[in-house]
Length: 130
Image (cartoon, rainbow, N blue to C red; front, side, top):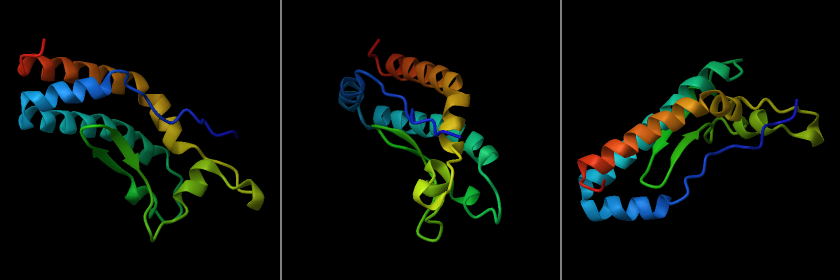
């Protein structure tokens, strides 16, 4: 199984959006962080469903993070260092990829984009930027 390497969504004009929201005030920036975490949680929920489970440790490390510049889903930690190997594989050790994270994003891409678009429209309207 080949890993889906399209592992993200890029927002063109994101820097300008952040600057406009920063100029509108801290509440607008916090709204953007909250929106980014909300859309990351959509993907995180799906990734938890798709994550392979032996002990359940890796599934428990899947976390949604929202900042003013990104919505990210993280997996793994020091005690679960194998998460990237599970996702991307390790051909030198005959470990095939199981792209559960990128598959989760692909499955939820429409919902992520719809949620983000509606949220940005609301933020712009609430802050007099539209």
